[in-house]
Length: 390
Image (spheres, rainbow, N blue to C red):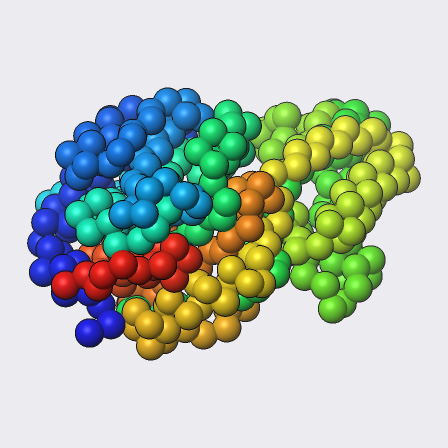
């Protein structure tokens, strides 16, 4: 059958692991309990080596195949939760107020743990598998921190693969594309400095609210009038704050924050340049000043063509469903690992339910056998299979 019998048979156990992670969410690099639990399980499975503290709280387990160490491929899962309140009402809901596994990283860990357990038992491959459990995907750039700590060279990794669940897509349907997949995500903060005063005497002020209003509209031309329409870009103004919140005071200062998401390095550079020019020029036209802060975040995540083909083949073997994915304007720090080594990232449909980052989202445990089977299948595809799993 396309979903391996062992994972279907163990679903109750694997769901219990997942729900324990779900009840104890940790943020960013502060994944100490989570990492300790992962390391304990990897050692219990019989990994040949388990290294902790890579990239603060990252964990790597090494599993040698029957033919000896040989070539090493890596499989990655993320560990961190989100700083949001949970509203699922589940008996295993978060025990920590203001923290929630709202993106499914609890399930990602369990799919990779289930695969690691199977690989340790069968050793049905030649070479070495590195299972990577990474902290701080949700904005902390944990993948980069692990890479900067020497992850790839330290373990001799030659290629790397990752997976993410996606609610709202049919259960077991994989999605993937070669080339640019997830977007580069950059943040901006624009501070307009004017001259505050009484709301009854606007002529005696330089009103930064008016400047900010013109600027917010002007920023939309970065996508509509400055960028080649065949390119992908999303510029979103996500917040406006003033130095005074009184109804009868024109503030002296207004701050605008948002993100720019692109799939092309040239478009990314263009967007930053136009953002600066529009902010400074618009402010100057009204006699105000603009302070521009542009923070480059995760780069474009680019799947390598050959390795995308491997990932797609395995997905079809697992579920018979693998469709061509569209561009995703979300960010993913797995991009840093794909800059270090060739590989691919795939998305797995999780069925109906609230979307990612929603307070009522809960990872669908029925996804676990699909993801675990895909991880094992990638190993067999790339390192060769010595014997079928039951």
